[in-house]
Length: 270
Image (cartoon, rainbow, N blue to C red; front, top):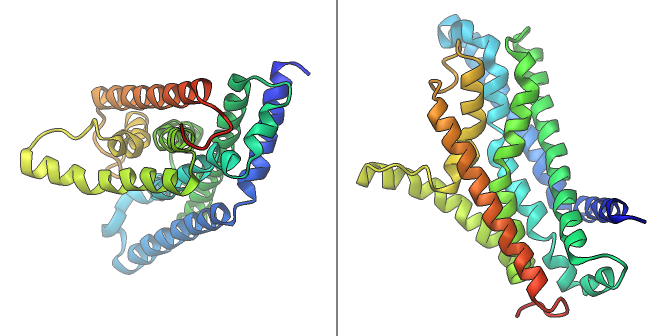
């Protein structure tokens, strides 16, 4: 078996390990339930108030519904990645896996790709459900040809918190600690960003949550310029968000790889 085969085996193993977690399935169900509630709420308001509520914007509701699932995407990313590396140390399986004819680079690459590809499948489901709900409640939608690009933008934006949690999982080798730290940063970003912007009047774009949540809507605002559902098109902000995601991703991954390569696998902490 070559390198690709060994990595593929780890990817399959990672899928089975992650899907065994009931909390991941619970969050997926909650994400879909939340999207459904949002769609029903918008529909009822539209039906009660009339066309003055959305007007012609009802043909772009699918964008709003899909974007509403982003909070759950970040939570799922944290949970999938938070136990990816650490659970192997906690259960003593890291030694077993690395005793096989597989390098540490192949091992961590398989674990990363396995978890992230599973997350991408969840994001594809959330995108599909958002589009389907909009079609059922509001009829024909505009701009659906951009739905695949919306999906790719969501996948890219989720790299920040997936990689952050993945790094904590390897660095601290404790699943609970890794998830709690990543969740703390996620929610602290939500709270701190508006406070800093209001009190000090400075940009908070460097805080991870801005790029993670803004990138998909910024991409769509460049593609669908006729909708007020989205922020005004801003190519500079879009480029900045893409760069911030890339920088955080590279930094977090490099730290995780360095930790694995330089530490004793048999130990939870070094």
